[in-house]
Image 1 (cartoon, rainbow, N blue to C red):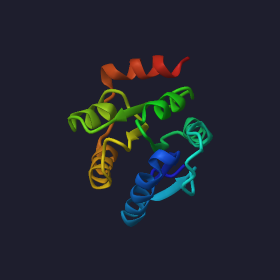
Image 2: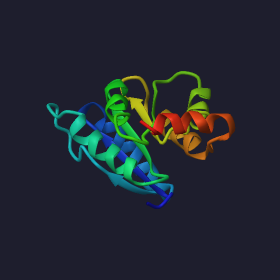
Image 3: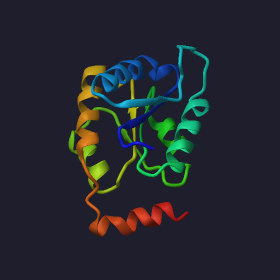
Image 4: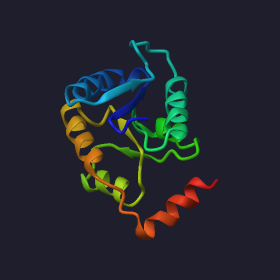
Length: 149
């Protein structure tokens, strides 16, 4: 998995935001692996898209993903069931949450609640999130404990 590839997944609730983010990532020179939804379908279910994306991330070291839903909560819960996936939910709280999710928790998935954030703000936060490196140190043993189950 190339560090320049970003995994995306959503259901209907995050479809519009995913498409805007996808376009932005491509313009920034990232490759995108899109697990869908590939079209708006109001009756689809997020596990159908999030689970394959999370499975891919769990099987590919250094893979990074961005997932979307109405709240982002269920999507993060689904993703976090896969070993090695550490999904952090972000609504539109303090930007420091974005940094800490990477610095202290080595989050490899960012989950957006599309009902709580607009596309321009999400794009800026993604750039910020992708630029932060895991701090390691005392946090490393916690990550190892999370990933050992």
